[in-house]
Image (tube, rainbow over all chains, first blue to last red; front, side, top):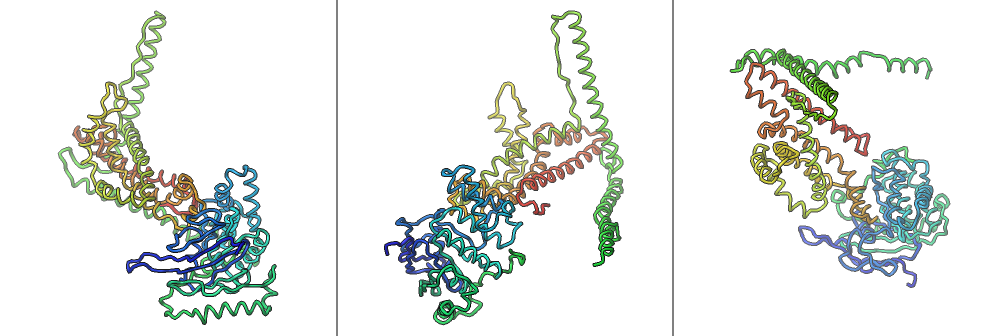
Length: 283
Length: 328
């Protein structure tokens, strides 16, 4: 493909354990175009986060590698911004200062002081956080923290935006709201996005392609589904859309028929608690 | 709701009901009872003990000695003021008679009082503690950041941590005498010996706690730092220091407590002016007042130790980013 932006070829990783190396991922091949929105979906523990961490450069692939714009990825960097599942804002800095830390690092030499301030404020505005810019993470709700996390990632002007279950810990209403904001922002900025999710509706609604992963160990890509729905997408209109529902059921079939978990429930790594620890008053 | 009920509730909340009395009793009365009981036991117990310096001092005798020590301090201050006044007058007279006369200004040879000794002790302990902090925090950060450094230094730390100040002191004394040679020393040798001993003994808690605090930084925050490719210094400043402040202060408080304890022993043996020397001199002096004066010193040492700990707590709540954190 000529317009390949990000390429994962033959990516595999094994971790050393006392019982010998544990092969978590094997032979993951994926080509992503610029501006594409790709979701990774699969059961817990199938290595979705590992794929993301390899692309981010936080993990080193044991075999194969990742190439971004013709250059191999082997360390973390701001051109591959990560939105972490639990926001990971520095609790001692305000929302503004958290974004500022990233902006200073990326644009420290290119932008003047006023330009930087405008850019920080612009990004916080993008996620509708201007009203609570100068609050610390402890003083805002879970949804707001996640929005600041997104603003921090966007402010780095990344070539690829990596999102690790960004809305996983939020309640359903907040999640829907942030999904809509994310679609708007992506339509405006045209970022390349890789998002990990557990949520089938979220995957179908947001993605251009859904990458479905098989169960580990030695997890790999099971199927790739192209979502050919016109944008902008409206969740209410899509609820009765036949195509939407077909996509949805094919993802569900993959997850619950082809990749059905056979292990007993107790042996499973428990899924992260959904919307339990976060606030009910989330915006 | 009926507004009058609301007002009544508010008023009731502000008033001093039986619950508030109970809370007050708990907060004030219980410690008072403990204190009174202690003084009673002390009073009765002291009468049973006869030493070669007379009866062991009870609360009343100790209070009397406290007053004596205060009067001594005041009269010494007056003597000093009088000395300088006399000297001034004498020199002024001399200059009046002969403007070109050579006048001599002498310093008053002050006998250090109990309160002078306290100040000296505080200066010594702070110098030692400050030195220890300057060494322990950077080294602790280093150990916490690198597993290799940790493995290299851990055995050394574990071995030196439990060493008593009394064991260090002879070595420190000899080394200071050998290394610190000067015709006109700015600082007394005994001062340096005490400071170095304090430093050696109070390094460890700060170092270990800082290292543990740094090593247990949230992995996600470290990932943020890696994704941003923060420089070494920025990483320390924005991620490492703020997250390890609580542990660091736990270490600092332990260290200051040890420093204060060690100092008294060091001053006794190194014959450095200060509370330790005060206690030792009173013991050697062996007058009938000595035990009472030592008791005053004991209580004062305890009280100052408590104040030092509170002071660090205050600094912690001032430095810590998390203003809601309960520090105790």
